[in-house]
Image (cartoon, rainbow, N blue to C red; front, side, top):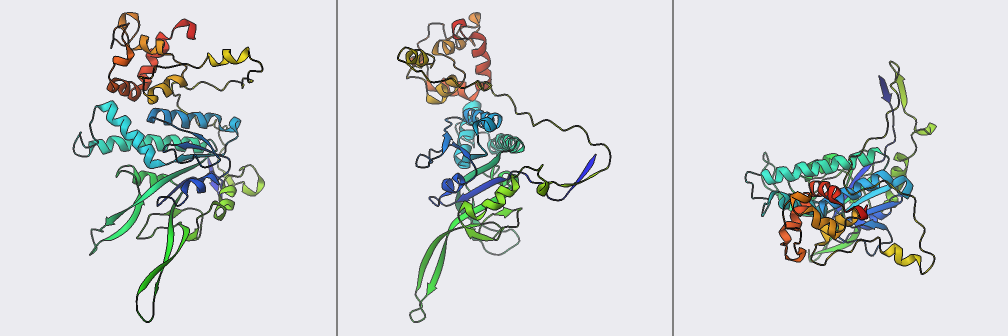
Length: 373
């Protein structure tokens, strides 16, 4: 057993939310060597590396892939941009897997509870990423709602995370640094006419709680700062320093012999992700290029992108898919005949396969055609 005293550097978990167009993605791009998981397609104008999930399962796959490989890939920051669009993927996955038409279908708030449970597991996954040494930055939109305290008279407007009622509180608790970004406006009053005029528009970020917004920090930051990464960069970089360096070494009082060093946290295995292989050099002549192209699966146009993205991640072909949904006698799930025309299958069925991807891929692995292995 040991007692750890003093400052112990650790990469922070950051949530930054604000009004539309204020520059949340640009702010996140300033963090050290970021890789974006872009859930809303908002980073096309930024010079950053990105992954673009089209389903909840694909988003989880991407998070775990980066967590396992960020050192070899050279990244130091994982950015989820944005949380509210990621939440939409989680909600769609819930509705598809449960057969709900809306989140209200189960009644008595059960749908929101189920969504909150899925969201909590997602945040736990991000925590595991953070524990492996990644800075985790999440952006989100803000919305204004009327707030009324039960023990006070009157109500007032306040800015909040644009997340569902079960997801917003645990997200705020999860973050080490919660920043609210907005335009600072000054109201000038004419001394003669008493007319008022709004001026200013400077982009600022708030770091502490206020009746009009949520914010917090564990880094003794000023309450208000210009909205730019450079304003907090030195603090972030200090927290991500190697804790073995003397200036960051914690004061440790050993009570008894310390146990052996623990290995890095284990990340759950996600179907479709394979261990990194050495990079394959590009084709150098006209004869090699066609061979490389033949290894990329081609899928019928009738299949939705959410499904083909998952199939491609595991290198499954359309024939593998047809076998997996085919008769049980040949190892399939028994949904359709062996010669079923894929274009005649309703979209709802493909959505169901995506929402239950773990089970679907288990069958795909079993029926994968030998020449595709």
